[in-house]
Image (cartoon, rainbow, N blue to C red; front, side, top):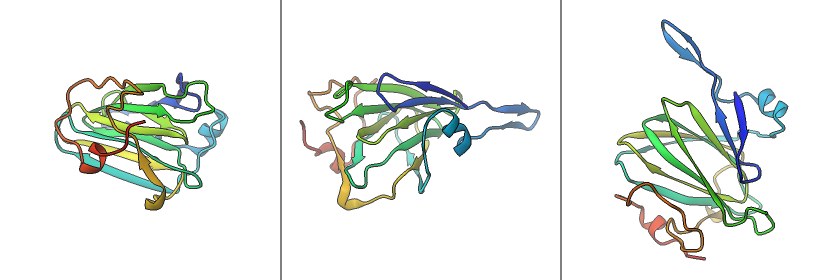
Length: 174
């Protein structure tokens, strides 16, 4: 795995290094020792998967508040997504800034979103299968979000949204 620190402190782009042969490929998408060597403590307590059927759908911007704040690693197993980390840590030098990465089955990239950052993505193809590795259990009482188009953050999405959940449409603006 290749770890690239992003402009948001604690956020990383992680590139898998597949072993190729005539059968296809094999790659580690998590190794606690490799994360530790990169200086990234991460303990998986839950793994989630989502299927987004329609290109243009936005999921986000989600996070959990303390004491159930979570780090998450996001990987696109099928299709292609525009993945976003938004820094909501008031004491951070990058507060209010966001970073995007294109994640796809072809580029085999993942993104690590640290505690205190919101996460969301837009499907760039139909039938996107996305997996999340979480450092904290889902806790509905601590689940929160910000509006995908909150004018305080000026997130630039690649296309107009085709579908949003009612919850994502109605997160408060800053």
